[in-house]
Image (cartoon, rainbow, N blue to C red):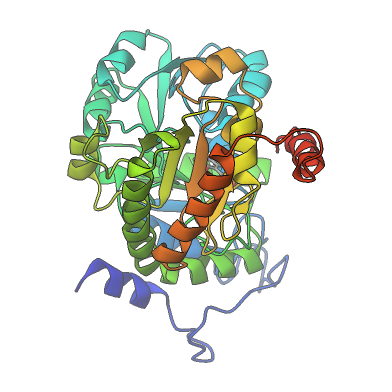
Length: 406
Ligand SMILES: *Cc1c(COP(=O)(O)O)cnc(C)c1O
């Protein structure tokens, strides 16, 4: 059987009633026959049957031994960092997700955990950053938002040689396209908020461990610290995963068409999409993933924050919002939104230009999305008309509201 067929049928039919949809066990505790004698559950922080189905599904999706479902992607990242001790070091990708950067720098640094940021699209940079204190290598591939690709197998062999853990944030590719554990990673984390949920209606995180003992250590940390996913959101995430492969296939196909359109457009400077043959790591992306995903970034010929702002307030189908991976297309301006907590010089050095715009291509028809981008690019490249332009106050207000990063 194909993996997709297996996946759909691995979600169990309820043995009690025959319900084809997983029941939502909305309960905090479980009645025991005698102290310690129970049906596998005692208290819902430690385990909940709806969450268990999701966790087993996640483990199967990524080819791991253990899945653990968290209340957000950041809670999942946090649990992995808690494997470390004071004095340990992490090597992480330089254009790491802004929230992970904030967690590393503003929370864990004061506990004595230091992070070195490198361009991991060249695996040698990872090798050179290794010290005897390195305990964890953290990569995203593709990265957010410049879609850099890291050779997972190459970095995994460096991690093995130096006995440190390799964790891959697989949020962007999703397991429909890429399975890091099969390429040598020890851990995968997800923001389930994105492609796995797929409908922009929940916040969730997952950790998947290859080794059962490592999985148990994360489970211990979750129970000890408490950031579990509730039963209803677990159910929603299961429902999202049921259509993951179908959705991601379409997201990728439309993104390819749109990336090619942008690549030809005169107002666009550079397009970042691993499916374009001129992408520096196109060959590795092709080797380690089954598709190139639904995220595209690009810069404008007029490389200013203002030009990007004018663009992101002009799209109609592409809604201006943080996040990605849902059925509705989204547009964002990383320098002013997701990456605002990264200092400007460091952000630019990592390739996040002032005019960089990120698209999350949804499930609308590609031709409609192209028409939307075309009219917005047209407005962006037209010369400004001065202070009597009625659009200007709207732009100013929007720019102000964008200044609060999540
Ligand atoms: C959104 C995101 C996260 C954080 O997940 P939350 O569910 O928002 O906490 C982590 N990594 C990547 C790549 C993301 O896009």
